Image (cartoon, helix red, strand yellow):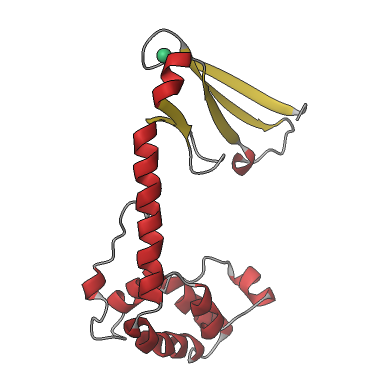
Length: 176
Ligand SMILES: [Zn+2]
């Protein structure tokens, strides 16, 4: 990546004997967009490396230095989250709710109204121009939805008799 513009920032490591290097890199051309910026970090200290690791959700996020134990706990939390999400998806409540959500979307009278409904339900964040090129209906939208999304629609809309309150949906750990 010889064309990348790389910025390095050194900060003192946690034990104070060495450093952590934070690196920001972006393509070196004038039409660069913020989304093309990527981040990374390295722990330069041998001692700190034994207890700490660089952690980031993706290279587009700022990395953090976290204790190894925390990373393991976080991974376990994330796994639990998706297990719970899958259970919601496969629940009877979700089965009951799905046709109602689909109908609420498909009964809209125009493409624009359908998109508004999809956005309201958190099932799309597209512009009308994008949606119009490749429109889809309720079945497809709900097929892609996570359990958390289905539960949220159920809680917010008068479509279900609060079937989902029981989940009090653990926007736990990973959903901001
Ligand atoms: Zn150190």
